[in-house]
Length: 523
Image (tube, rainbow, N blue to C red; front, side, top):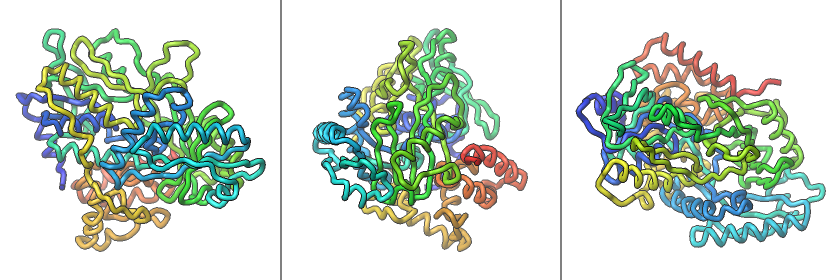
């Protein structure tokens, strides 16, 4: 399905068109709302100021999980909901979500018993959607599975099962699913103001950032699904609106797979400051994170703080015998979580519930915030239900529990780098027949080929180098230096597809390199 931006823009060019829902924000939540609304038959438009999943939604810990930490906090409701949604997501997108085994190393028998019992409860809460039973494992089995584990004082391990996925690729799948269901989605289209009739919102103004043309769009209801930017839309609606969101930063470091191994993930349930740390096999690399640092401001390209990087390195050194160092880091990335603003002075961000929150403003604006990737579908369902109420829409039942996502493919070869395309994989590979040069690797350090750049540009709405290297492929997140080396070739391929000139290529390379430098650790 080739997607032309001109055709999408044409859909918003008629000022008399009235949309049932206009969704602001193209992250996990906004894309989920678009899929839900369109599949119910509503006339749906989604606008994203940057690229889909540019922010938080491409920078997660790559887990589809109930949240062992939330169980320890006593948030049973969130855990049950997330475990149910985990099962639904595995069924609807088996090409992007898989069962991952996690091991908790225990250096005291008391902890071994505690986590063994706790994870048995986790299994019970999962019920028929369990990914596999947890069990106590011997030090011998643990060492066999993760040879790099610190053995001194090791008593036993607890093995349990959870989900692992590729966040940005799931976002792309959701975007394509929404379009297949009849929605219109536009990236690089910024909402500049909300319009009202009396005190009620009846539309908005938006500018296409590629042409600088502004559009005035009519809507029965508007959904604010902008993550850490929700307060900015709320202020558009009501200038005196108070802060709803307090951003919390999470940082991840990426290493060669030899630091962990290709199969099992490591979970440290309580670091010295009470956080959770994961080491996960991901795309033939080892991903270690995350941190939980409260911030007072937010930005599209958050930067890892030195103390966050050091925390991950120091904690890894406690549990791994092959100790990761700064020079081993292939990429470092930071993401912001949109947490509810703390109500008490002493409330820490890691203690704030990850449950989602819905707000219906007097103007009719529907705002959704909080939550996590795993529960995106339920968040979307609740949001559309409220939008129906707000916009006086005809009540229609949610269909996404059984809706297969774009690329649905059950027999997955996880060793094939093309697995993320699901049922599209053969079509991507077939592009090499159109031009054999597209079969060449873009860089020997990563598995990506030219055909994937062409596919992303033609079929997945990629508009800039960064869209391809950060989110359609995961090059920037897996090896930032390799991604920078790939940039000129990607720019040239995209320029030919988009009919751009040499100055566009140079500008794109420069722009991408400025971003990519933040993913590289020096020293």
